[in-house]
Amino acid sequence: MKGKGLVKDMMWSIGAAGTLLLAFIVLSRSLTASWLDQFDQHVGVFIRDQRADAWTSVAKVFTFLGSGSTEFILFFLVGGILIFKFKHKWETLVLFVGVLGAWLMNTALKGIFERDRPAADGWLIEEDGFSFPSGHSMVSILFYGLLAYLLWVNMRRIWKAAWLVPVIGIVIIVCIGLSRIYLGVHYPSDVVAGYLAGGIGLIGCTHAVRRIRHRQAGRIDTGRDYMEKGHKFSQ
Image 1 (cartoon, rainbow, N blue to C red):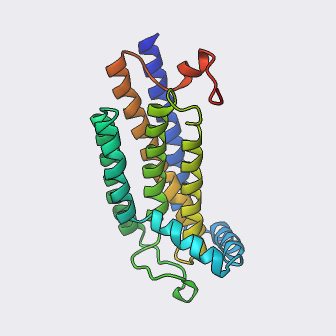
Image 2 (image 1 turned 135 degrees about the vertical axis):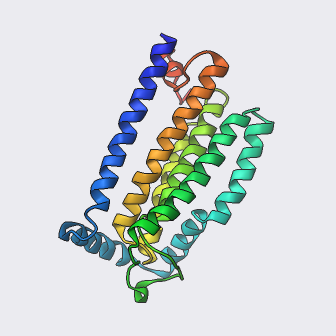
């Protein structure tokens, strides 16, 4: 059963990553399609129509949370907790390799597609470089997604409200993507593509973490076994 659980988890990961890859390919091959242009226009205008001083300040905060400098600092803080408190050096390595890989892949993809950003007269902040896929959304879904996953799997047995960690992670990820559209520096399709590409990396990294924990504990740890024993997050 242990081996079957690991194989099943691997097959699920491959299937999920393959689905996201297919969606990314379809999106990337539709950059000049009229349906995507209409999607970008309608969604982009709707989000930017919500502009107000207070919302602009909030958007800038979330864009800051998605910046490389912020994630660099948070990596060392959380990495230190994982290594020195939980003794999980391999999981910390997965986080480091995953985030570094996402940044390098995003740079490569932007160089391949060379999509210009929206017109600069609609920007609320200064940006440079190409637009597709969004680096903030691509790296944030991997960094904050994997960060939330690592904290959850290490805290769910010692903290009754550990389920809040992935919820907060999802909120941060979504708000970072929305902030890039709101501030005018990305098309909505850039953000969606970033989530798809980063999501592939997130699936691979979470599977790697489960394999590490399986080798260390002699079983595949997905969290389902904990729930099957009748434990509830609200206890």
